[in-house]
Image (cartoon, rainbow, N blue to C red):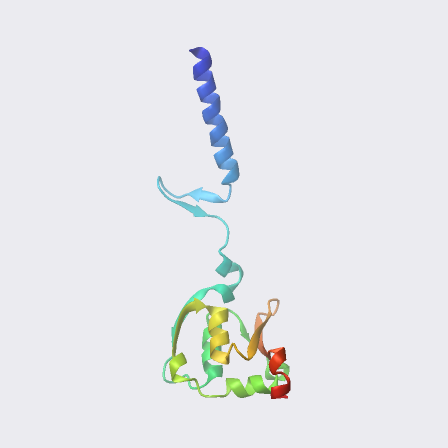
Length: 144
């Protein structure tokens, strides 16, 4: 009986140690809830956060909408000197009615929908927190 109690005690202690060592990034906040001590993917990269936007009547152009979306992320558009002419032209076009309400979807997807994901690729400068849009290679000759 003494050995049985000792075995149960050791097994309980071993399972406790295993649970705690594998869950070192989880904190219990009350009896039934735990939280992760790691940042979310959206906290690491704000462009993968999920967002929804309903643009007001003063948002007139695609560029206005892109800037409003980016204002929520800490990112900004690259300077126009770094942009292709077609990118600048697209940013200055009127915001389509169908895009006045957009989401929920990832911020990077919203940006591409606003610009035209068939034509543009999103370029991200993580260090400077800048975004730019480059014409996809198959459309380069069309827009030069």
